[in-house]
Length: 66
Ligand code: FES
Picture (cartoon, rainbow, N blue to C red):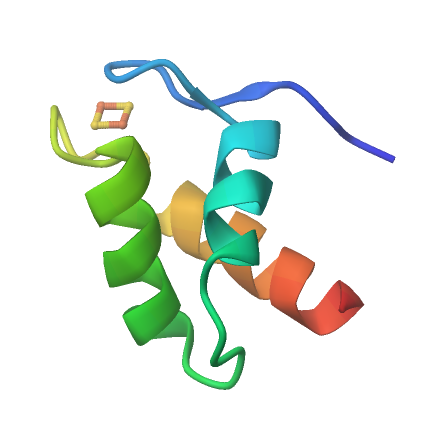
């Protein structure tokens, strides 16, 4: 599986960082809520914002895989 590639270059947030942050997030039904939690923990997508869709894609991918 894809593991440690950088999803957010501005804040140096990797796929694994997002996966770890998601582990602390209990409700896996709402991608946007999960995104907010992941953002609080990792600060991903708070720089240029260009990775926003990529972060959402990774989150939904991980959530669907659980
Ligand atoms: S790449 Fe994530 S905020 Fe710029």
